[in-house]
Image 1 (spheres, rainbow, N blue to C red):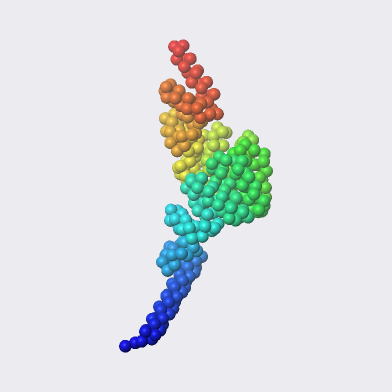
Image 2: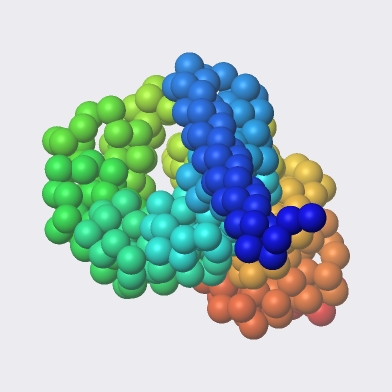
Amino acid sequence: MLSPRILRGLIFILWLVTAAANVLAQNSRASSAAAYLERGNSWMAKGEIERAIADYDLAIAFDSRSTLAYYNRAVARQRKGDLAGAVSDYGRAIELNPRYAYAYLNRGVIHGRLGEYDAAIKDFSRAIEISPRDARAWNNNGKARVQRGNYADAIADFNQAIKLDSRNAIFWANRCNARVFQGAVDEALADCTHALKLDLRNADAWNGRGLARREKGELDGALADFDRAIALDSQTSAFYANRGKTWLMKGEVERAMIDLNRALDLDPKLAEVWAYRGAAWFAKQEFTRAITDFNQALKLNPRLADTYCSRGVARLAQGKLEEAEADVDMCRELGGELMSKAAAWLRELKERRAAR
């Protein structure tokens, strides 16, 4: 029979062996996680997204607290187009490291792509708080604020981005576009012209300058700029939409139709483009088709005031007085710029009917 002293010694030795085994196991798991993480990075560098994700899965299986494994898998999922999966992984990376600025920045980009602009602004603002010298965070915050119609604050963000990196043409182009929407056309023109001095291949700068020139009534110059934008980037719906609207302003309805159809092929969720095409159908006196497009525009964005006026005028042309009157009332309520013209046409029709 073992003495108590020897028994205690054996227990202590067993504890040491167990502890050492646990340490070795933990080190082995950490080593395995690091190996899979490194191999995943190699697959990413080769563009092998699925293989990279599979290795990141294994890295996480070996080390569920690896911030970098979640972050890298999020980047891979984002490139693959799995935005929900990417948002989830960025969220987990942030839980593990609440000061991971890049995770906030990338998650904000996804929120912006999904039209979740308030969530995007929240993420970008947090990234700025953590890393205030990251010009991209200021720029992205400005872009999200433009989408919310907050042009003054957006321009302030672009100012800060430019202050941090004055050689980045993208920042100048984005401030140009914000200034167009704000109505500061001359300043916008100067910004986009400067962006093009920095980078003649910046499609957004050509598009922004086209918008500014159109606002100044320089329609031919605007068309030339939109041509350059499309030549550099033939997959952006807004470029075709802007050129289509400009053709419409010149009375070139068929050319407008071609561009607006292409814009809708690329992105059928742009309410304004449906409204523009509705105006093109109206110009062709295709009132039923015009109303169909106006309906779709308002389904996507019920706050498009002038589209109610446009639909009201189309309904007037069809003799649908009561429906036209309801549209003009809604246009008035929302502050539509076309309201006075639409109301005048409605009043004229009423007077003509009363005189019969």
